[in-house]
Length: 509
Image (cartoon, rainbow, N blue to C red; front, side, top):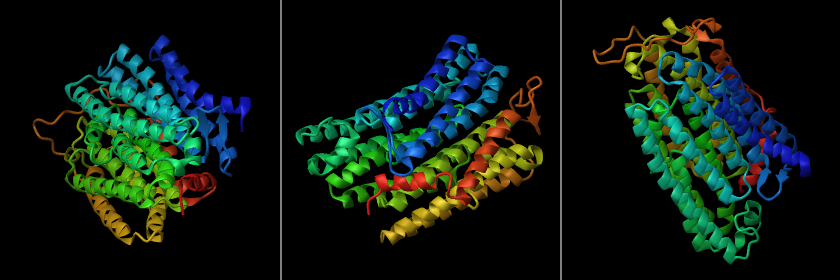
């Protein structure tokens, strides 16, 4: 598709969030503004679904040389839109509670209302960019926006986490910038027209200088790997995720990290055609296995449920990079399905964790016991999210992990499959063991220094409709996300064709 329809389809998911941000800036945090933000996320989701009608069979939607949607972009648009709808919808009640309990003020709510849709817009630009310079700039834009969101409450810990996030991610994004500059250098010396145009680079990848590209790809893996929470520059992630507002944590874990993986997928297509594919595979596998090992070890020792979810994100992004490293169409399709399932599942878990924190007043796992007996709906949502996260049927992460193991075995890397399965077992034991007491254990025993439950619990604001004390506006999007993840684990038709087409774009045989 080209021309005016293509321009509308590519611009709509960018303009809609920007318009919602402008409304929040002019009007402040009001219910119509909040609904407009949810609608903007829904437009992103609709644009992704609509584009699938052209891209699932290998086509594309091109709006000039700068914006382009193919099957890979289409999958990511769907992820951004779906997770965005869940996080912004659940975020309405979250921010109402923040105002009611005095954790933020009118100006803080306005700032939140502006920054969240700008965050969505930046991620949409990143996945639609056909120019790799624009891709880098959009990812850098997400760093700027989310830094203020992480420090939303302006407490000592949140400000510290925000600065740590900025400092570490700035190093990562600087390395990614150097990698982008080297790719530009290699392209110019090879006489590639539009030296950072992705389609041109793919067409002429075999002409790029292998030595320059090897260094460039290594810098890009470390740089964008930092944004994905991968070893070695991963330490910002647990602090940022544990201090950010719950809906923002959902967006960061469910979308921001996968956007960085998406960037690596784009560069992988160029790298395997310009340098030795074994170098690409070896580097990606080294980062992935190290990250998976780190996450498994830290999950065993974790005592904070928000940080537990953050370290789980490292584990799942490591699995996605294993798929990129193997690089077959099956591996790429399984990776993308994993990203979709992880994004929706983690949105449910972080938004549920925000509700748990509001009721319990603590993020300590041992201080929250027997949640099912006290808040069964909230515990059910959180528990189902954990089941999905652990890759159990009928959820899609079960299918995607089986697909990844099949792809790894099919590529002859059985040692990788064995290591991954062993570490997944460790992760399963770590999370399920902690969740058992958290959800089903006896009454909590608090230390004298533990925080008391927060005043003004959710569901106690005026005449807001509730289900077992939990807002309907929270229950509906979280339950809907869980249903979507389950459907994707049972049937193929919603995304199957799009995932296979994306696998053909990135994957090599």
